[in-house]
Length: 217
Image (tube, rainbow, N blue to C red):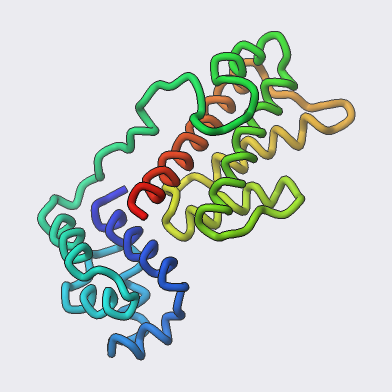
């Protein structure tokens, strides 16, 4: 993610917190055209400060904080932002997720009990989706397993989770659904290990974002 994309994600977060007003409403509030507003959220180029200032006012955001974010983006080279900790850190469990098994146990089960390993990976994502829905949207996912994927997609689109969150959830979902077929369609051991790591890492990311949100509240 470039610094410009990262700043655009910050704007999207402010937009969501403000109740997600339409582009038309923001255009009226700021005096800027709808295409200019849309471009500011697109993350293709850094918007000007006068525009960002008007958006901050329209979204009832802290202008000083937004100014710092904008200045930091402008002052840094247009290169990739630092890699998030959740992509490189090594952990053995998901904090505050009552799922019954650690990552180590889930990976071990990939050899001895593949169905259990896959179901545990899915359970980690399911509980994470429940936490995301409660923390950011005040609701819960629907009853279908596809609703879990949609929750991650919604959080990604709103800027709460990084790009690719929905794809990870969807990949785990694909194999989870296959495991429930008759006969079950189970991936190889190596694929199960990859699925477990992907699922737990996405759950860590969700947990870290929710923790940071609670701390800043």
